[in-house]
Amino acid sequence: LLILIAGQFTYYKREDLSRYVALRPFMESFCRTIGCSIPLMKSPQQIRLVSRDIRNHPSAENALQVRATILNEARFSQPYPLLRLDLTDVSGNIIASRQFHPEEYLPQTTDINTGMDAKQKVEVLLNILDTQQAAVGFEFSFQ
Image 1 (cartoon, rainbow, N blue to C red):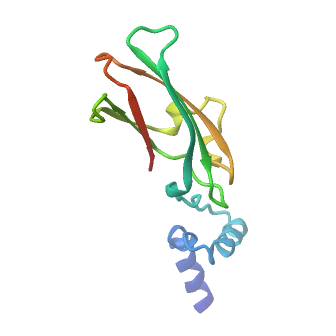
Image 2: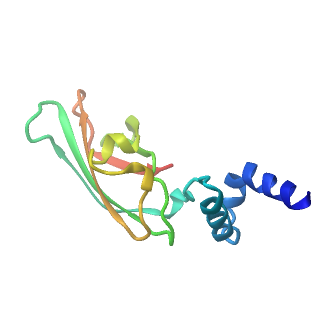
């Protein structure tokens, strides 16, 4: 009876328990055995911006093209992050801000469910409108 209760507890708390690094291997084995799934570990603070560039869009008026390379510095795969892009003017004031979901910045051929592998670099290309034509800088953050 105790084994059954422990198994039920583990099943229903699998997402919470899988967040502990020490318990993660056990939880992965447990879920492989009984056919459940656990979410990827998430650590957006371990995603680093390696390179970035902003230019006028080559073929669209009043638009900008932002290129960036991000790197998963974690030792584990994790979900692709929510990207936040802040555009700034000459004075450094934020004039526009937008969040991008993985579906918006990754190629359609990317399997988003598998996440970013450890030490994987990902190329990001964003096309955005700049109707004010005042953006001269930008900042990325990850969530």
